[in-house]
Amino acid sequence: MDILISGASVAGPAVALWLNRYGHTTTVVERAPVLRDGGFGVDFRGEAHLTVLRRMGILDEVRERATHMGAQVVVDGTGREVARLPGEAFSGDVEIRRGDLARLMYERTRDRTDYVFGDTVTSLKETRTGVDVTFRNAAPRTFDLVIGADGLHSTIRRLAFGPEEQYLTYLDHHIAAFELVGNPFGLDRSGLIYTEPNRCVLVGPTSASFVFPAPVQLARDDARRVLADVFDGAGWEVPRLLELLERSDDLYFDSISRIDVGRWSSGRVVLLGDAAYGATVGGLGTGAAIVGAYVLAGELAAARDDHVTAFANYEHELRRYVEGGQKLARDAGRFLAPPTEARIRQRNRMYRVLNTRLLSGFFNRMTTKAANAVKLKDYARILAVQPGGGVR
Image (cartoon, rainbow, N blue to C red; front, side):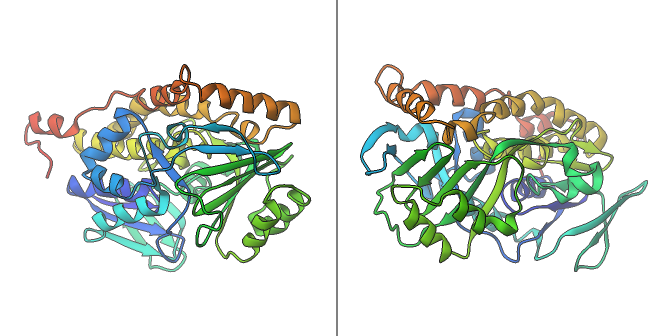
């Protein structure tokens, strides 16, 4: 089949890799003018995540590009350590920068996938035999299937399922992040966390993040002014971070939100990753996207390209799994940026307890259990035993 994928971050190239392997023709359209580099560190934890990476054939390369991040150190206004979390609590079994992961998969797929950067879908019209698609810049085309792997604010979801407001639940906080050039804080594979009531900054060797609450969702166009206002007068190294932000031309800014779509497919259009089940922070989102890509493509192959059966099976296999990840992310904003000094002290005491020998693995075991809460089918084996089966 000829399949259009919207989004070239993680889920899009991942599903393109599998669809190519099963013999389909794939096109990826991406709004950004080029493949995005840098970005957050994204972690994989548990055998389910690692099994999918291994079956993709990229686990060794992910490990080669791993950040090897160590402890996250909580500091007070003088820079004194008040608590710390072991590296595995944030970084799982292996952590890689999102841009490095996207590039790795792009390089594995670009010979067989047509990547169209600097463009976006403007309309979808399903017919009896396909989906007629128009683009902002490219000529109209018809595809057999369309996959929306274009994130929390998915264009495909809006066009095929309805306005974003029907599916997005704002979780009362925002997050912003930008690149740090030259490791200005001199960190050696470690991170720093500074918190005041309703304000949190996280600093690593190559990036810095801000977390704060807001009564309503805020526009990205006003992000720099918002950050300057919210963090005005903050202590520690926050003024320095705001100065570095002013010199940066790469700022990520978004609400911390959850996506709940009643059904992940509509006719020949299906959603994948954050577009279907996003949770912004702490919801195992990248791991869930990788697993989702594996299952979606595998079910399509197992159903002999019967998309109705495949889409239903894809959702059946994954819905409870991704909802478990979303529960982990429910209070992420409030946890990172507690509203009072008393709540901050309470959180820091919990950090210190989690760092003791007795409970050091508790947090990691909890998140790993959620990451492993899916039974992966071996689609290569399934296809091999079907009449005429086998992975092409």
